[in-house]
Image 1 (cartoon, rainbow, N blue to C red):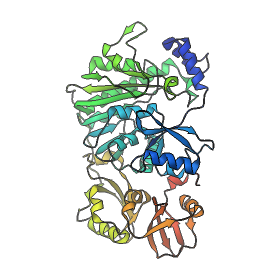
Image 2: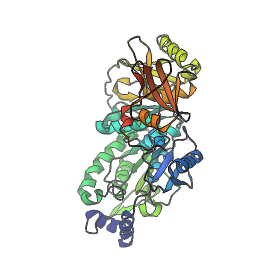
Image 3: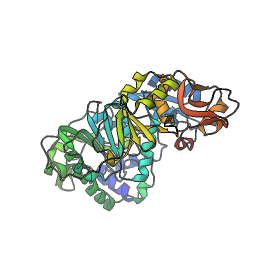
Image 4: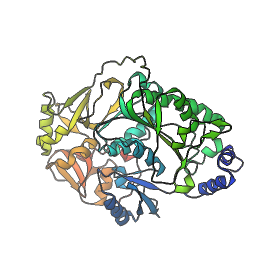
Length: 477
């Protein structure tokens, strides 16, 4: 952010020269890494010890953030390249980015929507807050960004989320007064993340923020219409422009039945502006919060929590076609032959599968938690995570994602990798040599951690670690 740039000039006008210079100085420093621990897989303390012992990565807890760690030393720059990162033990995420899900605070008994889901940091965080249960729906308009969203859901073994590829501003034509909670982490101009994305400071302009204002307002209107009376909406951005924040909320308060709920954050924050360039906003807006990057050593953010206080006008419903997907419980008579094969082959207690439902799409099968529900199956890009596929004999070939969900309950046809060379071969999709075991499909473990699946036949012991994860650079020690 050069001092001659429009971004610097805007920030100086908003906060004064001293603050603009403080931001400029902050941007010139190397960004700090924070990680969110996936406590469904490992405790915070255990991950700290593992990172230090195995990779010499030193971390420290963050006060009031129970599931987060700050990386204080990583000389070899390994935090994004560990096997544990690939396997979803943690998610690299800015401290500020963790706040919107915490403020929304969804639980497994609620119907929850993440309206702008990719790349998945907040979606996966909300899934974890819901204990990977209940119904979470994540929407993303950009089909290319859907790939990163699905990748991260799979990496963290999330089984309570369905993924939509939809215009968020139109989703209220499908879901009317439906959700208990909605997160709108809106696309924005990124004025709060210049330290990580230097290019923002070069192309940022007021014209761009004004164009985004219209989209952000439409997305928030859609979220309000989708929310039940009494339900809550969190609107957040990683930008600091008034046009994309206070002005959006002021427009909403004038036209829609919502009120702002005051929030307390575990980091230093400031009240939102109630006046700007001669405009006076609704006084409730002072209960929204602004986070300045140099004050918390993380991204700049704006955040506001809204409650819907009365009905909104019902939209004309969009017709949703019937789905060719079939969703069944584990006790469904048509599913029983597949289940029997898996329980017999891997020695898994049948009761384990009672916690899930299964979605058949052609020959592919996906797994979702038993409480997930939606009547609009045909509009989903993906539901749950890949469980397996049917072979020529109508038996389930277990997918590595499915193995990571239920593999810890298996008692047979387990292959334990015992050295680094075999681990590298497996994670890169290669064959492991000289394996003298019966033919068949296996659940593969390393240090008692389920990695995925493999098949042993006359051609050798062949890895079935997902191709999407093989492309990730990693270090093993």
